[in-house]
Amino acid sequence: MLAASVLAGRKAQRPVILDLRKLTIIADYFVICHGTSDVHVRALAEHLDEEMAARGLRRVSAQGLQEGHWVLLDLGDVIVHVFGEFERGFYDLERLWGDAPTIEVP
Figure 1: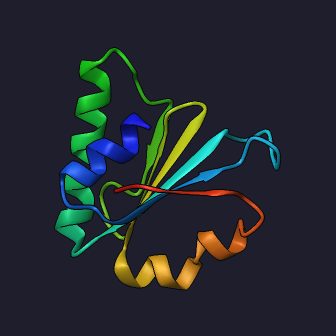
Figure 2 (figure 1 turned 90 degrees about the vertical axis):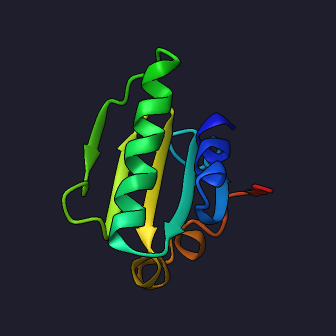
C-alpha cells in the first residue's frame, strides 16, 4: 500500500494496515502509525499529503494537522491515522478494530 510505504520511508513508527473491507463501509483500509514527537507527526502527515498529491491522489480531508497529536488524512478508500506515541496507545485502534485482518508494513 502506497501510503504505508511513504510513511515507513519517513521513519513512521510501527506502521500497520487494517483491512476493513468486510467490516465497514467507511473505508477499505486504515493505515496506522505514530511519530516520535508532535513535529514528527505533522512532518509525516504533510509528507504523505505531498507525495500523494504528486501522484495525482488528493486527500478528501485532514484533521489534527495543527496540533500534531493525532492527524487523520482521509484519502477516500484509505484513512490514515498518524498518532503521537501516547495517543496511539490510548486510542488503540488496532484493538478497537480487532476483527480486521492486519497487514504488517516492513
